[in-house]
Image (cartoon, rainbow, N blue to C red; front, top):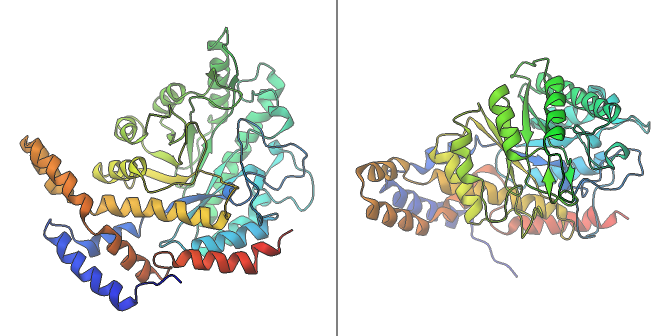
Length: 425
């Protein structure tokens, strides 16, 4: 039987840790106040393996694969919202939800994607308002007959391009609706699967078509207090191994030219490449960025986020650069091989723990040492802080926020699985 620390033990350990950090000039109480302002955008697609709620026979496509068949996935919007309620109860802080267009509620009627309107997401907005969740949005340009060729906004057929342009225009209006209703800006993120499996002859024309499509989609500005547009590039994907139209370089150039947001997905680059170093470089040229925090294993596999060096480097870059108000942190993974509520909670808690670790660094001291040119002292300091008791601070934060401390959250997951998930056939 697992034993857990008592509240007295947690508070006592925090007092000691607080004194230890104070020796380096770090105010842990202030750090926890800052951490409480960090709002993650959880992703609806972990809850049902990127299935959505459309009345369609189209299977999952666009180079996306959710592997596994763990029982209990959400089958309806209400089931997904119930699962999300449980997830949010296991995570300290107040957080957001990123919706894909395929999660619309159309009352049993077939509504094609270019016909989607704000009213098809009214239940999501009502739920979000009740629970103080902001909403972000994603047009869905995959898993649809008009995406079967592997091309959407860069398709050579004008009629197909027009269909997807209309869908993206509708998505921006839905994002604006979210922002108006909830009083917090919606980040509407655009990703397309367009590309070739094998080496193409003409790389330029599809990109010219994509640029024209984006120009049409973004022609009418929307108040940033309601909606902010972001563009997401990718190196390669299943079925698009040799050429991706919407590459990082393409969208970086477009975002700089149009001053949109740019999305950096941790799984959308070379497997040995991390996005942490890109954050400060990109923010010199665009106003804000959206992160899709994921974990690729050998390829863009979207594994559940763990507390590793890559995740910590992302958090450190955000905090050390003073970018908390310019970086939107979204999660993006989907594992169907384990309990989906647990997957949500593990990834979110790890992301917040990484942010806490970064916030606990003696940044002023570290910068002072670096500017002095004493790189040996910098190295020693960076290594020393790795052993500081950040886990004690995390436990205290969870206690104060009224969420499970340590592995207690898994006890709650198991109870929920037995009472709710196991009854889904």
